[in-house]
Image (cartoon, helix red, strand yellow):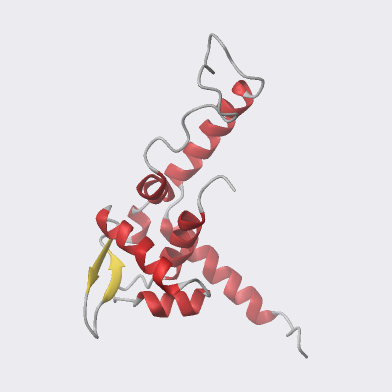
Length: 147
């Protein structure tokens, strides 16, 4: 995997948040997505710090988007959790890798970085939500594995 488990969990949780501005509890999201509750809550707090989510304590509280999901890119989420330089550096870990001293994968990795960075700045959380809805509808149309 290119990114951490936390980033994957964050993207899944954001795709599951309602678009209508209502709050969702971390424990409800973790149950719905079958993710570890305390870990997900910590991840979501990180997204609050990055101004992607807001949180409110209490029975009517939880987490919600700070702005519409079509205005939050996957790249923003990745940068918030992985750091702004997540795609930088040599894929093989060589400290001297660069234009003058490229590693064997330097050119290939540069092309991959360009494509991934471009895709992440174009893809939004709303795109993930729509993909999730399509998958749910497809799953409803399939026969059950148990019957």
